[in-house]
Amino acid sequence: MTLRCVVERRYHPPRPPFGTKPCRTGMDLHSLQQLIAEYGVWFYIITFLWTFIEGETFVIYAGVLISQGLLDGPLLLACAWLGSFCGDQTYFYTGRYFGPKLLRRFPRWQKPVDKASGWLEKHDWKFILSFRWIYGVRNFASFALGMSQLKGLRFLYLNFIAAGMWAIGFVGIGYAAGNLLRPVLEQFASYFTVAMLGVFAVMFGMVFVVHKVQCIIARRRAAAVGSALDAAD
Image (cartoon, rainbow, N blue to C red):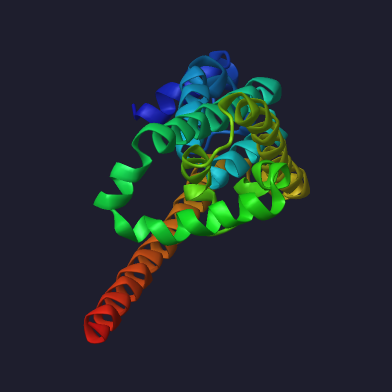
């Protein structure tokens, strides 16, 4: 008997001999819900760790699962909120205590750090509440803020509010998308797990490709700047 059949029989006990049917090859949405309910604690831990780093795509995916009743919405939201908050607190104090040393080691960080610092000077608290949504700045914003004159306590409470806005926003996007797709997902419930893993893999593949392209562009720009400085000397 295959592992799939063992799992299916666990959540779909066989009928009496008179009505016995062969094990199906798919798992319906109810079975998947029971499996996540049993082992889903790891999903919440991964959510915290993933959002500590970044995690927009992951949180949208989780929002879709919430809309299907497969995850606890408030708990998932709390994990995403705290993960994002703790991550940016860490980056802030990394910039505060190790910023100049790290910039000397990684000079290509200087441009995005200067950009984030300029946004802070221009927009102050509005930038702190919104930098998570700004492409090209989000990864260095907290680090740059840590190198500024911004007080740690002020960043703490503004960052807490901003992390909540970010978590609610992206979980909400996933939840809304899941509700829009619910008729389709219910129609193809037997293939739900495979389909969502496929979507997840495609989204992460796109993120990986974009990241690689950005790295290549950044290296070429740095090389061009270096060549220009050498020519000027």
